[in-house]
Image 1 (cartoon, protein in one colour):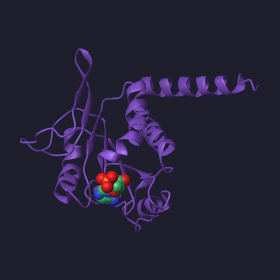
Image 2 (tube, rainbow, N blue to C red; image 1 turned 180 degrees about the vertical axis):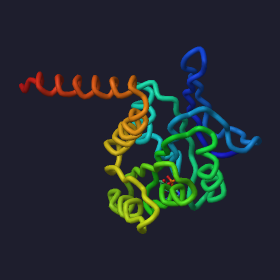
Image 3 (spheres, helix red, strand yellow; image 1 turned 180 degrees about the horizontal axis):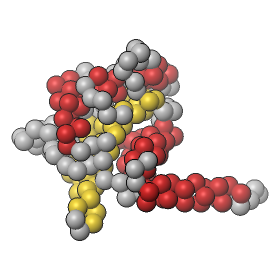
Image 4 (cartoon, rainbow, N blue to C red; image 1 turned 120 degrees about the vertical axis):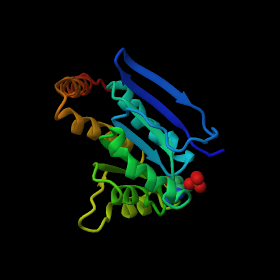
Length: 192
Ligand code: AIR
């Protein structure tokens, strides 16, 4: 058994397929293959409460994605294997979240040329350790680092969508509509 959660939304010829696999599932066949465009990975199941916001945002935009637990320290082989295989599986953007000594995004980035977006998780040090561990990459191996916590999770998904939207006009339209709706809500906000 592994402590992992996989939440897959796939696009196929007939539309969008959603499959959610429970945590603590038996893993006997190695890495799952899928047509996910965005892969969301996180260092611990305890990060999922925050990273759910990334998955939900991708879901809202109808972007095929998957989510999985892996750790740069606790499952280093899985993290490197995942990163090395992601490109050939059709993944176009990886979102990697971790807290504390947050090395997951950096390790993933070291093993792929796909864009890697890092999300620092809150921690015993309020996420500052996670932020610095994720953002301070040596020149040559970039990690695009977002804000600490839920805002970072949501924005990582929006940034992944923006990257994908460069070659997908329908996604660009959805992003523009989202911004317009957001602006409308704020303009119409009434205070007590
Ligand atoms: N973590 C897991 N492996 C390496 C790191 N840095 C992080 C997780 C989580 C934190 O450690 O990303 O934010 C605490 O994990 P846990 O499993 O103890 O709750």
